[in-house]
Structure formats: structure tokens, C-alpha cells
Image (cartoon, rainbow, N blue to C red; front, side, top):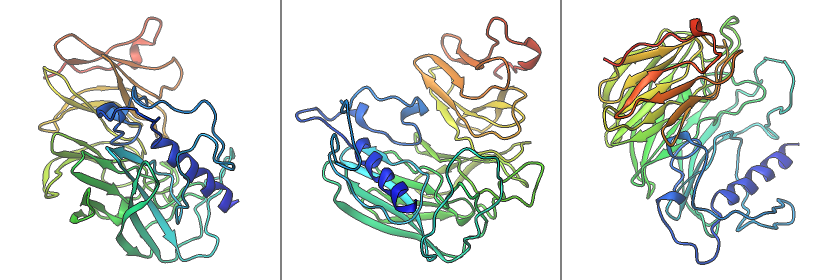
Length: 339
């Protein structure tokens, strides 16, 4: 089971770097963070094969073996492809995929090595590999999860990777270490069963020199912005939230750039420069993993509980806040005007 899963991971990794012969390089091919630019989940550039087969190699430009376990996604900038993984000392370490209701944690608490790796996206050649940290995990992980759930982020100069309670790590795209940020223990698990530890999964985002990180835990929950060059905290905003696994989304605007962060209690909009909360929309499900995404001038969250997807509207010169779709329960939409 373990080998089969890792083989599939390697195949999709190679597809992420697929470029047809003669195709021009441009910004549309960059995939800098979780679900790509503005978390839209789409790319206008690559011409992907109509068929691919991980076992035979059909439709793939390369296929490489990746050590360890990871649910994080690869990211791409130019000709570089970055990924993270966590390598356990336990022989045959794995996770248990599938649809089932079990919430217990994995028993693997052996020494792990958390890696950041860079490949040539055209050939699959390993360009560099760095050990961010090594030791026994500070937290347990869900039996379905890994210790490398969060996708890294890059701006073409820096690469930032989050490993939950192990810390946030920054490197240059050449593999030179820059800084580490320790947020302490991030206890993320079942909101109603604190003893269940499932592990972190929210991914960092880089925008205009800032690293945005969302941490919703059993204890302190917060959204924070760090200087991508130094790791210095620029602002930190408390959040009254249950544990969640969503990734923040930066929404650029001529009027005011915002950070939209999903959560169990509310979907919230924050001012990018200061971290001040601008509006909120809720309530929501108690176990929250999806994120907001930006497509053109429409912004929406991938999660709603009963009446469809809540859309967030660009009001013309700037992103003004939430509104309810026709037929949507108006009492569920609690918007705050941008201040």
C-alpha cells in the first residue's frame, strides 16, 4: 500500500511540471503556493496530456521516487519545482487512506526528518535537498495524515515551508537557509475531543514581501504576517476560532488588499497591511479545511453547510465584503462594512 501511494505521488509531481515542446515560459506557468495563484486552482499556461499513466510513464515528462510521506502539493517557479516531505525512521511508515469515520492518531512517533527539496521541473533532476529539522514529532498525526501536510510557498526568491509545531522555515530558491520561526505547539485536532491530535495542514502564502500564516488551534488561534526576508513579525491578529486546516487567501485590490481566512465560526476579511479585521461571514461547519479562492473578480469559499457556496463580491474599486446569493438564508450572512 505504502509503495503504491508514493508512486502515485511521484507521477502527479511530474505532471505539475509538464510543458509541451516549444511552449513559452511566462508567469502563468508559475504555481507559487497551495492551489496556485490566488488559490484559484487553475493555470492558463501548461498544455497537459490527454492521457497519463503512472505505471507506464505515458504522458509524463519524468517520474522520481520521493522519500517519506507528504500530503503537501509541489509548487513551481520558472524551471524549479519545490516540495516538502517527512521521513520517518519507522520501517514501512504509512497512512491509511479511504472513506471512514475513524479519528484516531497514528502511532508513529519515531524520529523524523523534515525535508525541503528542489527539482528541475523539466528533467526531474534533484537540484538540492535541505533538512529543515530533525527529531521526534511534537504532535501526533491523524491516521490519514502525514507530518508534511502543508504546501510550501515561493515568490521566486524565497521558499517558505510550514511543518506545524516543528516550525516555519525559509530558504532562498538556491537552498540557502534564511530563518526559522517557532510558533510553539500548535494543537490541531477535534474541536470536541481535545485528546485527538490530527496535525496541522494550513499552508503559508507569500505576497509583496509578507508571509501570511493562519494558525487555528485548541489553544491560541491567530493570523500573522512575517517579513519574508527576515522572519520578523509585522502583525499578529488573534482569532476566536476552533481548530481548522484552511489556508489564507490574499485578495489584491486597487482599493485595499485583503486576506480572507476561513474558519469554523466565521469567514473573515483582514486588511493586508495591518491585520485589522474588516468583515466576517458565518457560521459554518465545526471541522473546517477549505479556503477562499479568487477567480477574476469573484471570490468564494469552498465550504458552506446547507445553502450552497457563499460568494464574496468585488464592489468595483475594491473588495467590499460578503453578500448572500438569492435564496440564501440572510440570517447566516453577518457582514461588516470595510472600515
